Length: 111
View 1 (cartoon, rainbow, N blue to C red):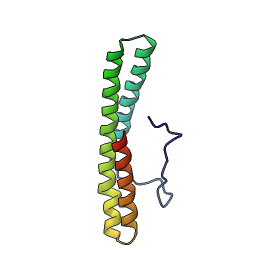
View 2 (cartoon, rainbow, N blue to C red):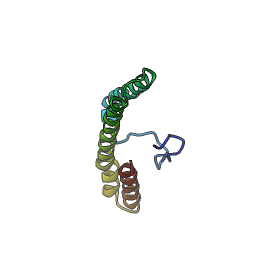
View 3 (cartoon, rainbow, N blue to C red):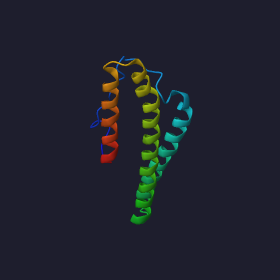
View 4 (cartoon, rainbow, N blue to C red):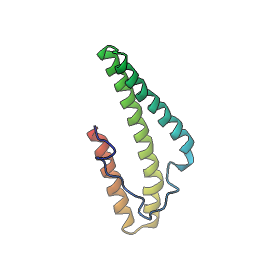
């Protein structure tokens, strides 16, 4: 599993905080992430309470699926917003955005 310290954080090319493709659904995304955070805390409790291994693994699978689903939604919004905007503008920016999206997809496939 990749930790935050091990992963590479890519800054917005212009250094601006947004708006990004996910901005219009930000509240929904934050709600979803809080739910996933609750699932992870539930995993911690299960280990603390010595819950049966298979039951913990079932919850790990559910948490992983929730994160993957969130990632795919975010990727879709990136393609629709950032990549589409770069395509409209033309120039070398589109190649950079496609390469960036391709690298993100490759990271998702490795998980």
